[in-house]
Image 1 (tube, rainbow, N blue to C red):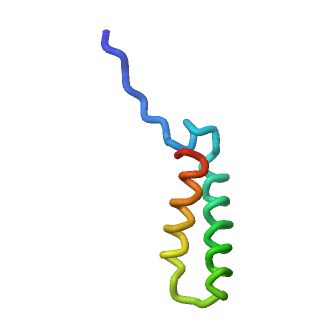
Image 2: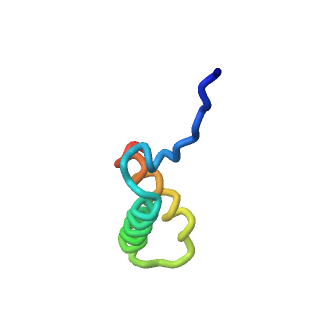
Length: 60
């Protein structure tokens, strides 16, 4: 009998919960926003940059 492949979310493999990962991304995005002097209009860019930074930090 062949072994079943089971998908494991990257956040789980790295030992961080999905909720904690999202909170960390949110926090980092806000820091990026503040570094831009709180100017509106770049929320998606801030989020994607934060996501990249946090995922690299947690090796996700």
